[in-house]
Image 1 (spheres, rainbow, N blue to C red):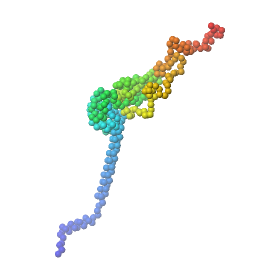
Image 2 (cartoon, rainbow, N blue to C red):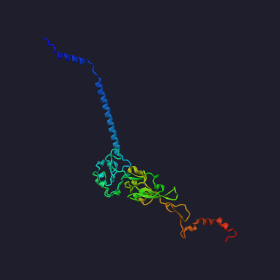
Image 3 (cartoon, rainbow, N blue to C red):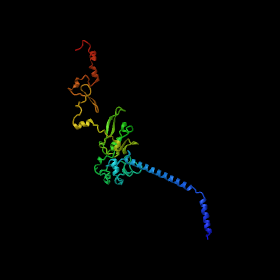
Image 4 (cartoon, one colour):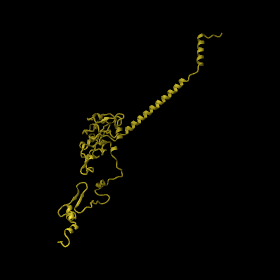
Length: 320
């Protein structure tokens, strides 16, 4: 005899039929697809931003801004970046707070030491404590004399506003230079504007400049006319096939092209010319060739010696 289903079983069967007969909604699948696309877009955007950040950081790591100067004894920039471990010991041991560690977005690679000469220059410590503190050799331990350091090179970049170029006696960059009369000298030139004064031009000599930045720090202008820059920005490089003739001549002890011929100005006898000094020089020695020259010291006497004047003063028939 067939067993009849209970009321609970009949209710369950009816509920299953109702559910199976209802249409299946596609909304959950659509939401999942939309969420997947949004998540993918966010991931791609995040990856792009990370790539851009890494690109900016890498470009910052291989370049150095003109105003960022490395500590004394720093290796070439690429070698320095490879050796520096960003420990900050050189910054800690600097007694004048000159050095600082670069932060992200600063003028130097993040975590590396540098200084800005306009703010705080290097004080040229004799014992060079920053170099001694470096544990990796990024600051060369063979540097024993601070005068041998080459942190950068001073460049006079604005002749139009430099007071010395305008004929005034500022001389501040020259006076504060630790290697005065070596790294910076004053070269005297004629003042064309006034016609009667001299210009004393600050001139930097790369073989003695340490790049300490004292000249830039002391410049009296609102924007300094002289600045310390990294060597690769401040100094060019001569073509390897070029030779300076006068230097080769000094090495050889004689001219390498043709025999030297002393330059002579086309002047009357008894006169010479000093181009960079006294100018026209009249030799007035007794028995010199000046006595035979038709030109005397006095223009009036020279005029009176003229033959026409002689004939006028001594008419024909009265010559003695």
